[in-house]
Length: 115
Image 1: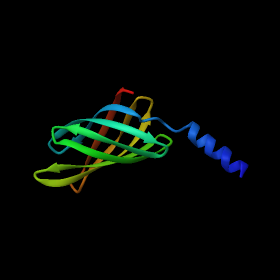
Image 2: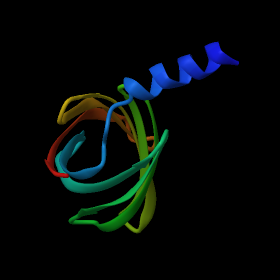
Image 3: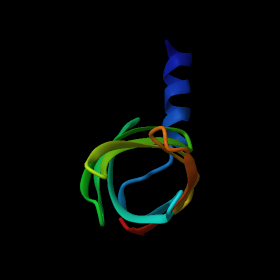
């Protein structure tokens, strides 16, 4: 029991913090898509929303150490398009890949602008 508690304390100590407002972009076949993400972290769970030229979308995700997974759905040509991001957080930046439904994937990057 004591070892499990120490392992939990160690895990929480190295957990990155994604709370705040982020300026983000990801590559698409038509060029970069820019958006703002407003994220709230509760332990390993992430929630929030995006705002972009496509409107607003609800974000769901998880974090484990520096590994972040986020997803949301946008409307593309009247059809829903799921964006699934896998990234690593390094201080006040996040970098990784955004999978655009079955339309391929592109580079993802975000910078924290406000906590």
